Length: 358
Image 1 (cartoon, helix red, strand yellow):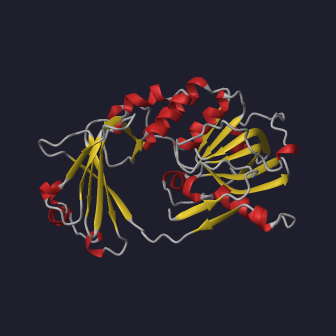
Image 2 (cartoon, one colour):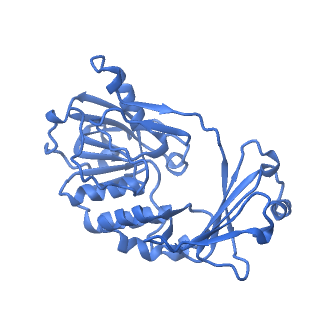
């Protein structure tokens, strides 16, 4: 995303998950702003989704996790395993389209779902929260890679098989991984974790030193389906309060921005101890497109294929259903690539720049 977060005060009520699933699984005590005054065992009312449509009253819970992707759900499960109750997960987007085992959905359009690789740390984290056995059956395996450098001929790819690693990289659709973790929540932690989809956090405030209040809106269909859209004002706005908030909202950084803004009002804090977000300009902006393709005869089906040219980059991974899906990275000012008029022109263009994948 071209930005980095600088966490300058460890007591901020934010657990920053910068790499999904590369979790320390909360082995240390959970930090709160001025933890000495915190009351994590406060009584809380169970939040019922029906209240959203009927009232704007404030509800309370012990823990709110903002972001229901892999990192947010894994964190919620880890907290529940430690005996914590009344964990509410807020996710802006719609839930996954199907259960993990519904192959007809996940395999019908391989370019629809973004593939992610689970390395050693990700697999270890999933094992520690007891979710790996339900995730592994829906993963493909990658044992190495084959790369074409800029200008390399079709037969100039360099293949490497990894034999020195204690693990094999596993590949799964991101939304399918979310579906697996949701199944874990429903099966084992339904009495502790409540996941709400289609909810956007509009603002955050701290009325007291041990309480955070989130002002939320229910997303309409556009907001819940599109990454860049925002919720519209509706009658279903509500507030949710908690003693601990966990930020797993990714690149949107709604929570990090709110904490930085809050710290600006605390004049008694020395400048070096304020939470702040430092943003850096993205000097390598790319537009990406997912591209499904069939392997040529004789090609391995268990490695990552990658090619770089002067204008585009292409990386492809095997899907759990056996086909390959690639990600084509294009510079925003590459008007030639983005203005191809039809499939025939696109085929001719890519036959020229990526002939190894023709």
